[in-house]
Length: 266
Image 1 (cartoon, rainbow, N blue to C red):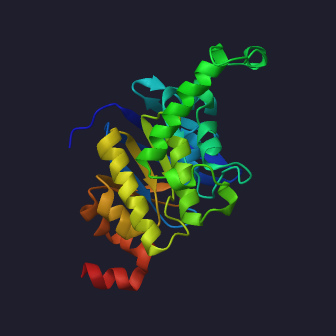
Image 2 (cartoon, rainbow, N blue to C red; image 1 turned 135 degrees about the vertical axis):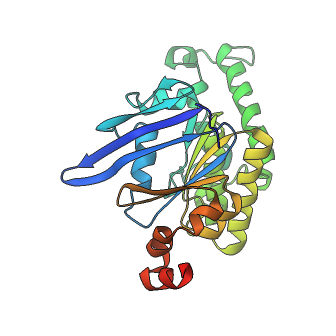
């Protein structure tokens, strides 16, 4: 399948001491697709996300977004280009309500600094008008993800599944073109997983956002992904359609054990 250069990773390597966390990882993503990265614990999936989002700097290789190299940029610089991320462990402000948490995702779009904020007097001030604009954007996200009934509730008191949706909402508040989802269904029950799958598909279909997904739930990955790449011990194993990857002997061995994989492939 012909791919565009919307997002491109070329020969990525990174090591920590003597541990080779990523070894020669390469792939491209097309605008609007869901591309999933799978692999057992310790395979290097989150390390890959950390390189893309600027938390880690690769030892070798390049990462490019719409033709612009980003692997040497800072995390906030990458976010400003249109790449947002959720985390495997919830990173919300538990003492703040839903609206406030999602508003925190608007920080890269805010122009009001300390000086201007000191003069936020009256509804016609620059800071007040900007605040209104950002709240309008957040209200659209709240409506989109159907979070109206929890908009004013403290996040720390909400169910785990709802908190995961709020973290997704905060990432959307950055207005990303690419959304990195690090195990969005981790710790969820079956009903919560189905809700998350529903929202991810809506984000792809209705908002046109490209999604790079890490997830251990193989059924979810196979159901919603356009393409899948499997990695193990930091190395690429295979890449292709969900059906092709699911039948790969190396993938079967990594997930269900060598003997069962031999039985299935025979």
